[in-house]
Amino acid sequence: MHSVDFIYYLGMAGTVAFAATAVLAVIPKGIDLFGACVMGIITAIGGGTMRDVILNEPVFWANDLNYIWVALITSVITFYANRLVAQKYVYRLMLYLDAIGVSMFVIQGADKCIDLKFAMPVGPVFLGLLTAIGGGLIRDVLAGSPTLLMKKELYAVPLTLGVVLYLVLFTFFPDQQVGIAFGCVTLAFLIRASAIYWDLQVPDWMRLKEPA
Amino acid sequence: MHSVDFIYYLGMAGTVAFAATAVLAVIPKGIDLFGACVMGIITAIGGGTMRDVILNEPVFWANDLNYIWVALITSVITFYANRLVAQKYVYRLMLYLDAIGVSMFVIQGADKCIDLKFAMPVGPVFLGLLTAIGGGLIRDVLAGSPTLLMKKELYAVPLTLGVVLYLVLFTFFPDQQVGIAFGCVTLAFLIRASAIYWDLQVPDWMRLKEPA
Amino acid sequence: MHSVDFIYYLGMAGTVAFAATAVLAVIPKGIDLFGACVMGIITAIGGGTMRDVILNEPVFWANDLNYIWVALITSVITFYANRLVAQKYVYRLMLYLDAIGVSMFVIQGADKCIDLKFAMPVGPVFLGLLTAIGGGLIRDVLAGSPTLLMKKELYAVPLTLGVVLYLVLFTFFPDQQVGIAFGCVTLAFLIRASAIYWDLQVPDWMRLKEPA
Image (tube, helix red, strand yellow):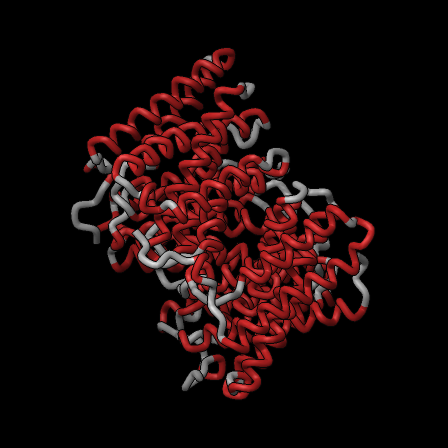
């Protein structure tokens, strides 16, 4: 799948959302401007960086510094305009942009593995998820917050569904990659967006009622 | 040391134990199925992945996805059968399998460095330990639990002993690598198993009575 | 900038300070000798290791094990002589050595990127900072302590100032690299040392009075 301008700008919108939500998440902990920028940038590029390191490829932002600039500028603006960005409607917009971001990055991350034929078919699923949620995991660990792995929000499951479906469909219809990618991004986004809108949680069968 | 079938299956037994004990460790924190699988897989392959990244080698599981499949299936089973796996006798079995796992992986990790003549003789000790305990460290950090570095359990010391002895003996008797490896794995395992059986802690001289 | 003996020994002094302050920071949490050594070594080499992994270069300590030996020996001594090292005057000496260390490592880390023309000019700033503070971040995460990103101490800001200025000046005067490097290390150190001496905090305009 060759990235076209539209996809590129969607990716940047996701970067904005990653940085903005990251800064908003750490501001209540009393972070300063430096910390906010580090958190914003690491959340935005951390997952893709870990993917590229595991793939033994040059990190993606080395060839396109826009990712870092956009994350940095978003972090500074969010830091000082935090009251504005934390407004209910602006914040919900950020959540939906974040949903676009993770839905795209999970497929993009898988795509990069497919191009390299890396550990098919498990590698693309695994590194796709790492691309999408890895930055957020680092952010929570550095901020001393519970990671999303410990939360009941329906966040990673739609991504997993999307990327697994992508691999299954791609295996059977390898010449339809672009269409399949578009469909799976849309599917992951729609489920995640529904989770934001209706406040959905992980379904019961994926949870333990009384853990041992 | 060329891996033979027996060693391979021992490694898989260690992988089962890593994933199972990881899932049991995070269940009381209210994790869901997705989180449990991520924790199980990361614990099982995280240490070796960091080793390979530092060595600038392809990650080991890229060429043998069994590691990920075994960790994934173990995680799912442990999640749903947690009451069974948490049974005293099953759990102790897991602890002994974990002891086999770490004892083998610390020497295997060192071995991979020796093959590459990487930073001899300190590199093999360092990356052997990273291979063995790195996955558990990531798991604890992601779960917000105290890492084993902060605990008094006799866990990493037997491994250190085994891998240091391995490097010393290998330096003097390089043509006896297989026998030495086998002996050091056994030694590390026996001490760690004793620690499980008799609930041994780190010896007094390695601790501070009244820290400053 | 070719490293000369003086710079090399300053780097080793920084390594001593990194390991010693790391061990002192984790002793109150009841760590044992093994954990103390791991913390000391990881703090000393963790940042540079992450930089080299991202740069896809061999890790720096693979070619010079002195970094690990010095960190290990410092950790053991600090562990057993913790009352001595925690003495007010010795501890302040360590803080100043740590200031030398981070001031040098931020520029050295940037330098390595410049030599490789990696992601100019943002890459050197980013990886310079990672080199300087990355090890401390891993230490705090492994110890369950708040990371420096969440503290009000004036620690990372002087380093950022130094490395940004370094990149700006280097861009305009590329043939004066050694002099500029020396000046920027000195500047970063002087501000950080002032922060230690007068207990300076992050300036008000970089903080939020009432976070949302």
